[in-house]
Length: 188
Image (cartoon, rainbow, N blue to C red; front, top):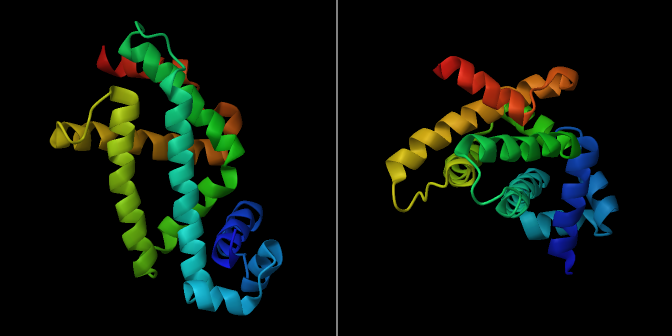
């Protein structure tokens, strides 16, 4: 790896260990083994580096989740059963990636004051909607963009809501079967 990649890897480690706001340029330089000047040379600022690290970590989570879900359910499972299994995988990632999720909520709260971050979060939101529609409902956004937007937005709202509950009180966070049961109750 070169200095740029080392800095990005160091920033991702700091993101997970210290969070977005508490990470300093010195922390990143130390974690990456690259000088402070390297941050400015490769990324212009610590914030730009942290933004790139955050969005790369989120892409990696999405790719990892898609790979995990690809073969996790029997092919003839009902859509609700596929949802249960997929939701359990998402909740499992909450614990492992807690710092990443805390950072996202932290940045959402500051997005009115950080236009560049807000722009990236909005782009990520759109990509996540498409990805969630495909993961949970098998909708190809290229084939049916409006259906993907609607269904993906619902899954995004559910994910964000359940995630916020889990961050505050993981002991009462709903498992996939419980979310499916709740869906049955509200659609009955």
